[in-house]
Amino acid sequence: MEIEVNISLTKGDRMSGPVLASFDTNRCVIPKKLRFRVLLLSLLMTTVYWQSTKAQGQTYAKTKYPIVMVPGAFAFDNVLGVVDYWFGITDELRQQGAEVYVTSLSSSNSNIRRGEELLEDIRQIRALTGARKVNLIAHSQGGTAARYVASLQPDWIESVNCVTCMNEGTEFADNLYAFLNRNKFVKFVVNVTLSTVFSALDIFSYSPKDGSYNSPGRGIQIAEDLIKAAGTQSLNEFNRKFPEALSALSCSAQNNGREYRGIGGEQAVNNVSYSSWGGTLNTTNRFDPIDNILVPIVKLFSPRSRIWDGLVRSCGHPLGTLVEGFYPINHFDAINQTFGLVESGINIPNLYSMTANRLKNAGH
Image 1: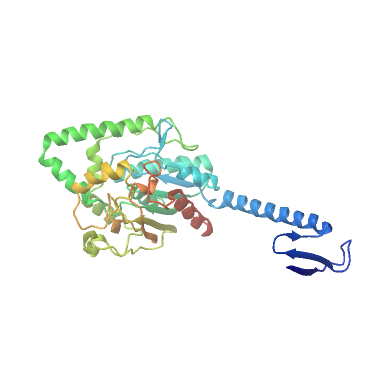
Image 2: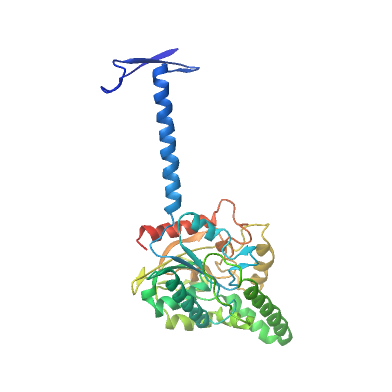
């Protein structure tokens, strides 16, 4: 079977009149005079497509102001040039046009002290870049440091973006601290062991860099300071002093985390934009050593019947605009650990790229 198609050429073409092209069910027969034009058009369309895709990739995450990454506990930058805290995330952001700076705060210290450290880091990054403001992307306890700086120096901060942040503390820290205080020898062993680990992380992540800024060394770390700082009482006190953009519905109003409605807070305070996202699963990948070792330990000291992410109640995630509160991720997946072993089908670096793109589209 053949189908005849009349292709009319424009007046400026060298050929005039209709041209007959015949197509059958097995092959396409195009007159020789048209083949070059069809080939040229196909090449042109392919080139335009790839160039537009490439251009979009180079600017998709290109925000107006630099992005500063704010880590939680275990707050290393890059250990011995091998393990990134933000595994694969900052690479993805930079590939898509973002200007990214990674900070490394104390692994175990008070929320106020970590906030002061971040304040000094941002002071140096602003001087380094000449940028008037920065966008903060914070994880876990990094949220309190970011909120502290945004409250004290709102003219330095364009936005605060919280990822599985510990805005209302974790009951795990409360119960662990109570247990250790009842067992003094165990407390001594745990404190010495974890303090050594935290201090080593600070030492071994001091020299390697993830980007063109490197936070100064934070010195000896004391694990007990982290356990107290992450507790619900400590965060309650912090929130009374720095209430900006907190969820309109606290954990206590959601049956202490047995319920989770995903309610955000004020979108902007003192010209600082606030947003957040998080998850509701405690384990996601059976091959992940964190899911198999750390999460079960946390569960031993955590109340049952909580909607949580393996460390923090999900009701404590929202800050400002809650972009998404129910991702199938846990607390550690949120930074793509361990080495990207997360729920199948979830691309964590892409979630950060989407965050940067939202900031870009909002003029941040």
